[in-house]
Length: 399
Image 1 (cartoon, rainbow, N blue to C red):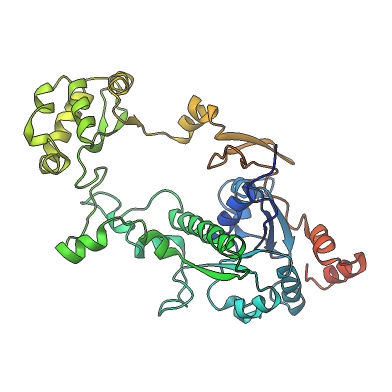
Image 2 (image 1 turned 30 degrees about the horizontal axis):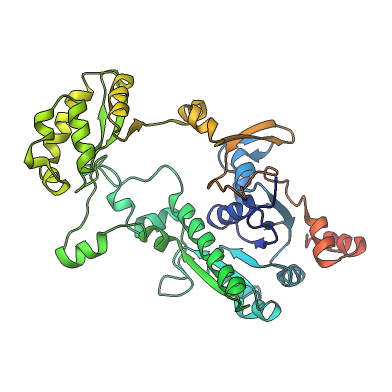
């Protein structure tokens, strides 16, 4: 395999759990050298989250793949001094502590940019680095609630629910990577040579995805509510039951697609009815159309429904469980399920790489490392420390 897109980019990851570490994982998958800093005693908390085998979470092996693990006690002055020395050698620092923590350790951007003026510092937090809420504790779940996502998720007659993953953290990780690459472009391609801070707030990452909610409220005082499986104002787009109890998701909200769906259902009369010729008109009759479509899907088993819809080129699909995903030939053909060797476990299946790049594809070099596995290598290579100096740091509990 040739060079990866981010080869040569050096990243120092500080913090734990999801948002910051997921951002650095994405960079590592495309060739960046990521040095992950962990507590010598406990390591990243995600090492013990969810399903654990041989003392380590299976999630860890995915979240920390392609990273180097070093252990440094950041609460001690000598540990902070090691970080300052490493900062001279890197391009990007990622941290997701509560605002003020890095400053307390003498590791503020103002102090670090003196050491390395080219430093790009990604700061992920619940509410951002300023504002009246900056000192509040913030998790992804709170960001999802404050950002507007939880309010519109679920059914109108039930309490708000959550998406089944840590979507707020993952969105913040994506914005962190986007910000980092824009900052690298500004520094290196535009030739400014200057670093900067990228301030990513969990609630803002969620809020940015809220589509037309703000202008609709501003002009029409419209508050979007929970609507279950439908997409309000976009018709038809819903989940429908088939005769065998399986569900099919159909998105036929384009005018031409809607006509093809009606013809596939044998309802030419509806296809050509001017009351349904565009989305605005159809949305006025959403309940009627959903009833019509489900009346048809309930008369046929799922596979037969899909045959009709695929033939008519109507976007439709099944609701996959992880078992469905693992057995799906398209996932396999696109290499979205990969196997990686893990010491003590053998081969472990994990998600593949996104996105696909034709000239500089990403890849999985190794699974998440053991706690502190690369500490000595990094300190020798980056800081030129001797064996005696490393032994001294170990005795003091710094590493």
